[in-house]
Amino acid sequence: MIRSIWNKGWPPFLTAILLLLLWQFGVMIAGTPTWRLPAPLTIIEEGIRQAPLLGKHISHTVTVTLLGFSIGSVLGLIIACVLHVIPGMKSAFYPLLVLSQNIPTIALAPLLMIWFGFGILPKLIVIALVCFFPVTVATLGGLSNPDPGMHRYLQMIGASRSQLFWKLELPYALPSVFSGLKISATYSVMGGVIAEWLGSDRGIGVFMLLSKSSFRTDRVFVAIVLIVVLSLLLFGAIALLEKWIVRWKTAKS
Figure 1: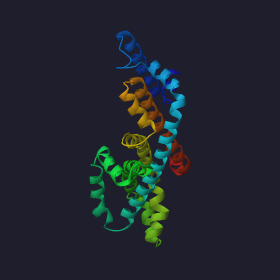
Figure 2: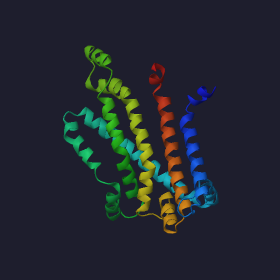
Figure 3: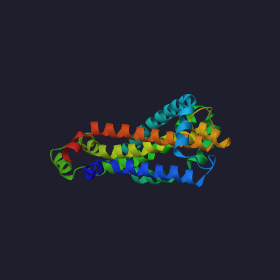
Figure 4: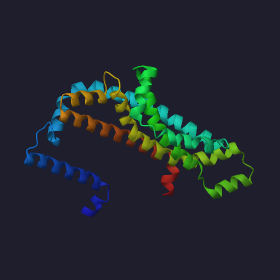
C-alpha cells in the first residue's frame, strides 16, 4: 500500500512537507529572529492577516500576466510557423532570436519604461519577451519532426506544402507547442513581478518591494509563495488543456 501511494505522485509532496517541518523546527531550535528567517507557520499567519490587502495585488498581477502570456505565446507560435514555412527564414533569423535572450530582462525593462511610460504596455512587453522564446523554440522543434511515414505518404498522394503543414506538421507539433507553453507559464508570473518592480502602484511585485523596504521578511516570503502558486496554477491549466486537445498522444501512450 505504501508503495502504491508513493507511485501516485506523492514523493514531491511528501518531500516538500518534510523540508517545511525541518525549516519550522530548525528556526524554533535556533531561535532565528523573524526578520532574518521566519518560520513557515509565521509566513502562513502573516499571509492570512494580509489577505484583504493582497486581493488587489493578486488581481493586478494575474491580469497583466495572463495578457502578457497570451501575447507572447501567440507571437511565439506565429514566429515559429513563419520561420518553418518560409525557406531561409530560420537560418537568417533564428540566431538573432537566440541573441535576444542574452539581454537581461531587468536591464531592458527600464528602457521600455522610458519609451512607453509607466502604464500597462511596457509590462506586457516584458512578459511577452519572456514567454515567446520557449514557445518559438519548442514549436520549431515539433514542426521539424513530423511522422516520417505519414510525411512520405502525403507526398506520394500529391499533398501540397500547405496541406503538409496543416494536416501533418502542425498537429504532430502540438505536444511540443504545449511543452513550450508550460515553460512560458512558469516564467510569465515572474516576468510580471519584475515588470511591477520597475514601475507600478500595485501588484505582487510592489507588495514585495514594500515588504523588503520595511524589513518584513515574512511578507516577502508570502509574496514568493503567491508567485509559486500562481505559476503552478497556470502550468496546471496548460497541462489540462494539453490533455484535452492532444488526445491522440494519450491514447497512443
